[in-house]
Length: 327
Length: 241
Image (tube, rainbow over all chains, first blue to last red; front, top):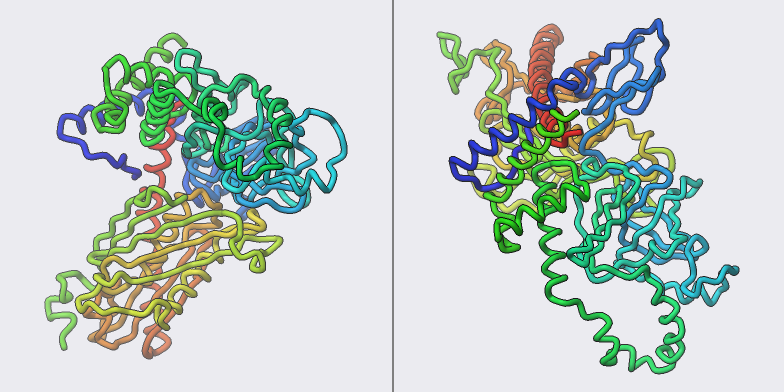
């Protein structure tokens, strides 16, 4: 059994227990019998015909699961949805990744998948926004776009013979700066219409990558300053020494006000709490948690304490029971 | 020495066919993709699984299946006499190999081409049967990591002392120098994937002892299955819809 690793006192323990039991009672009515472990046989009626999906195996005419998870049935297809597995990419997913290598005409990104993903130079919009062939010069300047260990937001393009390919053909994709990257188990993320969120009241951008990487950073205005960058580049390249000593203007641009930084930390901590509790992570739940913490006048560091965790669990139980009653 | 007294009790008070108490816990290493803690009596083992992930050494990459690696180690404080063991001594290399081969046989490696799975097992407390405990812990950790397996591999040892077959030997019985049979078993497929024996045993007695070990494996498998199901249910209801 996966215990929540927190130091709780007696009353907190009981309260948490009660909240979790409430959650259990809410969900158990839906499908308690659908959970399987490895080598459990899945009951199916062969008259209707069965399509074996992921996580299943045919053993002497019996359908057997190969992973721990929940059995899902879509028409004839029977598959097992794993909990706590590595991220499985689907075409069109919005993901956040970290550059692990700059190679020939491509970047390799760590995206929490069983292999590194590939972002080709040709599937990137150039900074100047002009459509043209990528020259050898572009290839040499790849490090000026993304370097190793940069955090990038991109979209899954598809599987090719040499692995998983990404693309970043829009202004909203690209390098992420001035913020925090959080890693949560990917099964807590859900595919939605909207993965980019601008939390207006905090001046913060929130990118919920489908791969369980979440970016919380300062809000950036549609990234149209790229054109500006291009104009400045020649002079920067001429005098390399100037690059290191930032001009006052540059400092002004990279400065993040303290309130924004505090907001980023508050939102990041809210996500951390949700992920330790193992609750689904959506923009609404995150803002709710942040509001709860600020309404209680909690400091940012207090959010990771056990008391707040218990409160969030109770809040979640309350919320789910309300939505249940409505639906 | 008398390992089974006239009343039919062993040194630690068990009956010959009795196993030690087993306990398992999933998710004991927060950063790992899958992890588990497994106890058989006083033997305590922790396992962590990382992957499937990108192959670290490109030359080892296999284009049609996953690379499985395993590292077994014993903590310095795990035994009574605190010895500084050099890393990669013969005993631990051998056990690493055994665990790797056993796990590789049940992981569906062809589903994860060009990737690597790392299994780390460490003995925290050694009281005989570390090999079996390691395999059980590794199975739990792999299942926790969501890696597709053909079946759960479980392992248990059995021995033969004072002309009695004994299940699940502890350290004292293990060091008596009698026969010690370790079996790795796939309960659903009803197949043996690992069979090791120290010392000698006549063929008809061996059948008996091995059957006893297999029974032990089945008992472990039932327990592991309960733990996994409980864990899956918890994850599911906590996540919500």
